[in-house]
Image (cartoon, rainbow, N blue to C red; front, side, top):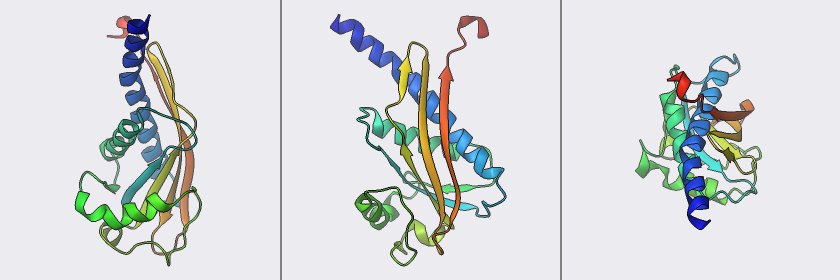
Length: 170
């Protein structure tokens, strides 16, 4: 019984990754089609857990970040992976943030990637992701904030979905 439940949990990991990639792709496509998003260089600063206990959370954050970069648009995403050493002060600031609210431009750090970026993107996973046999979904709420004015340029809740089409699709 233990072995079967462990196998079922392991089987959900790829499906969840595909759902997270879908949410990232949808995020970029919606931002690209919104005329209010008039920035090009975006720092993806943090994906918060919210209230749910998500064992795979660090993988979700990494996959989401990678999904943003892979989407074909004119945006240039500045990520932790690309600018690892420049995130220290930015991470310290956002790790201290306990809510998902608006930010005062006077308190935002003016270091590292925030010198290069026009805006930052912050997100929060809503609830625990749903994972079933060959299916998965995840909901992520996001805000795009202009760094110099703290103006919210865009906000949305994306639902990333993966549903394995089965062997006939191959």
